[in-house]
Amino acid sequence: MIRVGIGYDSHRFGAGRRLVLGGVVIPYTLGLLGHSDADAVGHALTDAILGAAALGDIGRLFPDTDPEWEDADSMLLLAEAHRRVQAAGWTLGQADVTVIAQAPKLAPHVPAMQDRLASVLGVGAGAISVKAKTNEGMGFLGRGEGIAVMAVATLVASPRSTSQRP
Ligand code: MG
Image (cartoon, rainbow, N blue to C red; front, side, top):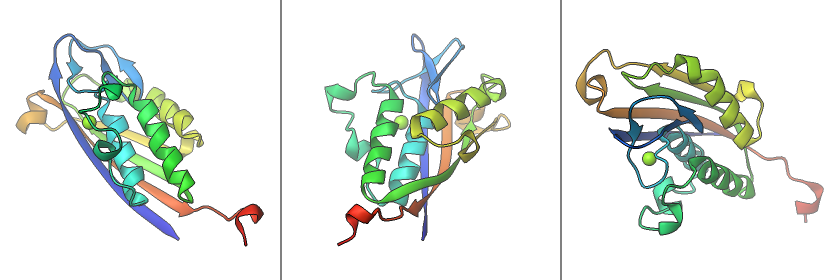
């Protein structure tokens, strides 16, 4: 059985913040505002994986009212969500991520994002796809007010280990 999950996230740019996407620090004059490190790639992918397992969403697992998650490394949130999904009997098949940003240019950072995400999730590099595009100058993304990310992930039922069988 294969399950599919979808995730979406967006964050507004602000001054005095690091820009972190897919667990990679990207040189830019602005960063994304948020309670955690505002890694929109990490958040969208976390929601896709949780969604495929019907285990809620990142806001339910890690509430932004909880001081524990202030400036949190979103890769830790992704790893914890993945651990819960695995505990529920699912194995990540693959994931595909689209980042929409008018600036900065993200293509040079795509390989590093893919490697970091694959490492955090413990899957081969070929299981994680990251793509970057602009919004052709249209709307809030086109004006460079922030970044939006869409993600899809598939889960397959983990083979039962003999210890789990009655
Ligand atoms: Mg977010």
